[in-house]
Length: 296
Ligand SMILES: Nc1ncnc2c1ncn2[C@@H]1O[C@H](COP(=O)(O)OP(=O)(O)OP(=O)(O)O)[C@@H](O)[C@H]1O
Ligand SMILES: [Mg+2]
Ligand SMILES: [Zn+2]
Image (cartoon, rainbow, N blue to C red; front, side, top):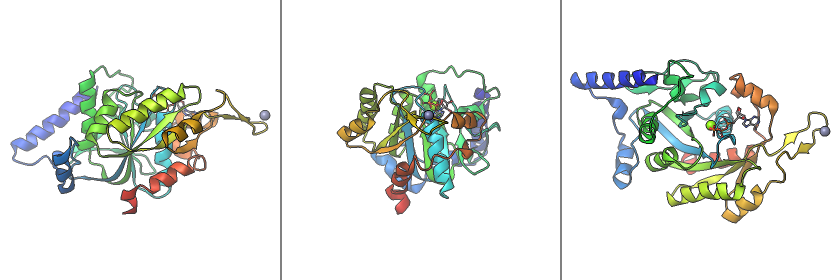
């Protein structure tokens, strides 16, 4: 498994250090050096220049975080932005499959080099470091959190307008690490109508608040099914309460995505770039475009 890969990285790093060379993958940029004095943020390395780190979270598994992460990444890439995805779901990585990525990540003196989709979205995922993508990752929380940090500060991301971080479900070690260690510009909360929406959205919202992370808004996934015959919206999971919950919390509804069987199949085939949900995510796109660092 990827342990070998990680060991290879450590060896490269040590060898370089032995030869008196610097491991630039760990070199701090001036800007972040300054920031790190004030908090626990892990510095970006000298080969990454990322304007906006956007976390995608949910209180529950299987609601479509990875689907929404990939959708946002594709839409922003189609708008001409430079986009990356950090797959922070170490035990259940699903981004590579959605984009049909199979190559193995390699590294050089700069650090790990993300794999690019043919449309130019840069991806780092534990699956891209494994020899066998079916081998389970059975590491303890702190080790997993450490890998997520490495994906951040030992990856040569280059220039990115947006780095989307696809989180594992819940409010565990990984989201905690990401919120603490990465300069997260804001998070997108993903829910589905059948959840105990109120409680779960609030949990994610409260966690973000406690950690001083901005909530950009909420995306409701599996909102409805479009009848293939008459185009009527079928509310599979009953009426949605997302508008009320969002209003109560003072956050925006960034989009409502239908359960789209065709999209599920396209995602399964690794052709995510072909999925078109620009219209349903137009609010999300607008909010992302307005994040201050892009404007600056
Ligand atoms: N709107 C949608 N229409 C059709 N299929 C979807 C939609 N959203 C998600 N899916 C599919 O449903 C499955 C679960 O979605 P996804 O992997 O994004 O959930 P997740 O919240 O990331 O799950 P986990 O908690 O395991 O990480 C995937 O096969 C995905 O392609
Ligand atoms: Mg997922
Ligand atoms: Zn119908």
